[in-house]
Length: 634
Image 1 (cartoon, rainbow, N blue to C red):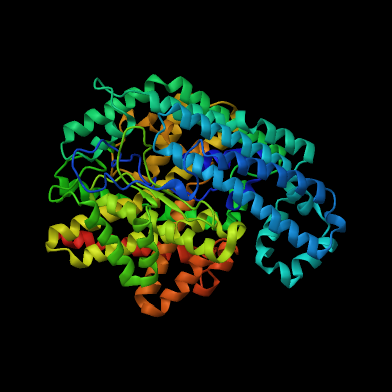
Image 2: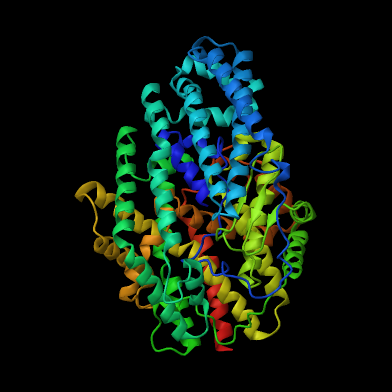
């Protein structure tokens, strides 16, 4: 996620968030659903994933590959020629020349993206390697320079008068790029003069993105507890069945964050101020307006989503009351939320078994999906083992359509890891299909649609596991695990969206926030979701300070809730329609970003601005919880 969002921040500083679906590899959509990443711990068991290492030679052999410098020089030449040929010419350009300009621009960005993907993929499994880090920084700075030289095209195209732009948009020869070009023009009210845009592009490597790097460095350097453990090692203990260990873990994590509270608070305030200034310069009416524009949805859709989820906060409250009973506790605390149920049979799942579970579930839905997913295993497009220096979490990087996506997971063999594998392969299949059909510009889906295939893939595996579950305990355990994942993507993300909303508004009206004020707003918005079902301790009030989404992509988190509820509705359609649903679904994935979310979903009869649509997904969660409650009484 950090690569995606660091690049996103560069574009945000330049004011060209419209690029984030197109010009830079942003669709590495990560499985960052909980407070923690429990799988990212040093492996103690041999699971067969140790040698599942990706082969990056489809991009470059290594960072010293001569082809990298050759490609950089090639991009420099093409960029200079592009600028000389098309700068200040769009108002008099012929249709043929305009088409050639768009094709050339797409090719340039594709080459930039190829180098950028390699630099990050190379770094992400060896973040402790100074050479890998320096190479990534070098590539990001070079990419920023290219972006600066090319932004004139988007500025001039967006500012072109309608009478000149409309004939170009309406010509059939530009069908492939119509949506991309139409979207660029929507940014017209928020653009600055080219000189100002160039200054922002020049400053971007030392702007908000650099504060995000400092944030990552601070967190990575904290040693938690007497054992000096990493963030992910200490947080993995929140899944421990021993409550005493969970209490110790939560205390150590809090203590570590408190030790850097002054720095983390400063970083948060700086990035909030940066966003405030950029929004003011670009005349965005609200802090989340730029994200809504990127997602191609208006405020009333986001409002309908947020209000629907908030109105069903009774669902997580019911669940945590049930979990308290199942655990036999008088009171459930924040450190108990991920504690396993007493009858959970968490066995280690070897890599090959997890692989087959995912492939079988995919094949039962669509052999085509299974065949694409199999390519990731057979062709070494996956990096699976947990190892020193490898970043936590999981992602799928689309790279470019002429290559293929790469998937990274940290596989420790727990049930959740199989779901994560299904999730990221869902992204991979989505990116593969969209890239092959749409090309580079249109292959990047809007962020709120990016979770569609990943969450759908998880649902396929979950339902497959549920069908083969033996006995009440195994079935209830699976249902509870799935509900907790859904709560993390729907209710928790909306609660975090409410926290974001509060801190942005307060920063803009009252100035910098103190650490204690951040904590108050965090607890208030979390309590709104939990009610009296979970007791939030004083320690928990500092846990806002390590959530990277708030810094790297302000406004992003509602996309998780959007994706989860959309998928629940789509899965319900599949259960009702059967195999006739499959080709329509694959067509949706292959459409990539060649349309707004409303356009992409038109074939499914979805109305995103209808609150009833969101309640339909929430009702499915309600029914799953009712099923779990019934099993608990059995």
